[in-house]
Length: 113
Image (cartoon, rainbow, N blue to C red; front, side):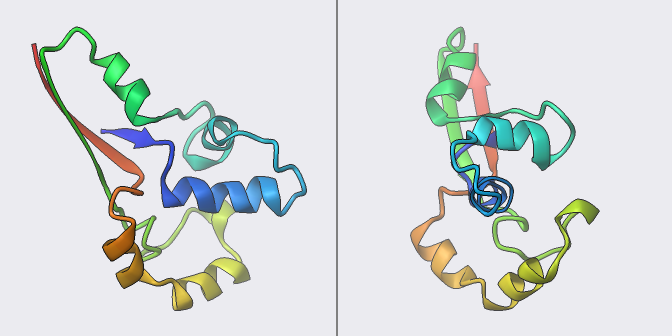
């Protein structure tokens, strides 16, 4: 498992730490590195993940919606606040599952040499 750049978690972090701070030019790479987990955390697009596995003959990549994407669980201390509490109550989980199933944070990769 590696983190998926184009996830709902990434979008939520970008809104909070870039857009709402009037710094919309901050990239998702910078957001993941500074705010997701530990300093320097990386996330990858499908193309970047494929390149990581260029030496493999068979590669299967898929994403999974997580509890974080669906706002179904608690968040780390630095991500708490009223906005998150409100979002948890109105977050359209069924809509996300139906129309954005590939927008998950976890990118699962199976590969064979």
